Length: 208
Image (cartoon, rainbow, N blue to C red; front, side):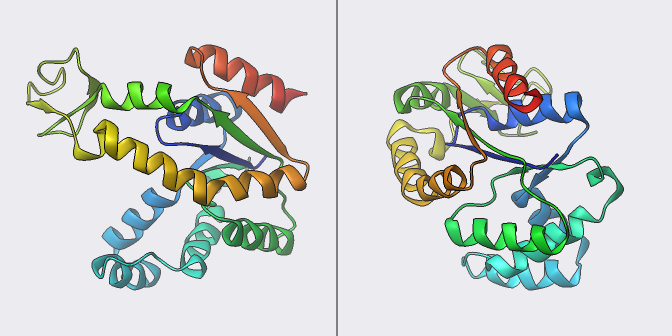
């Protein structure tokens, strides 16, 4: 089972991906994690990606697809994968589908976690991050529960910045949602609920 997980920043994709990994034994494929790991390991694709990243440029789709194809060869991907953060545009979605067709695979479902923008702004603006270990907590955490470090609000968790991020998401990813709707695999999930309730809807969609 291969799943594309869609949703705006703060929609709860990471939480739901973790639930699906545990429930279905799928591999969690985050393109951000893949890029960082490839760069850290100094692989040929990682070295190439680093050049773009150091220049402040977007890593080309072909290179990201190459990393994904490598990732799919790893043993833990045998039961299927959850794509988190990819595809980000329709070009990537079409390329991913073509590569899957060539490998005899398919995208079984594209889950779009839908959350009202104001709910997301409230969620993310309450988030606090530890300066020392990077732990992510909330406004109630005066000090980091892991290392006693100082908790602060990141610039990208400021309300105005969040609104800009949501606008960018809508412009780039809304067409991806339309693409998967046209392919007949889109399932919209109401994310304005407790994470357990959201996962219950996801299970209902995947098990039907």
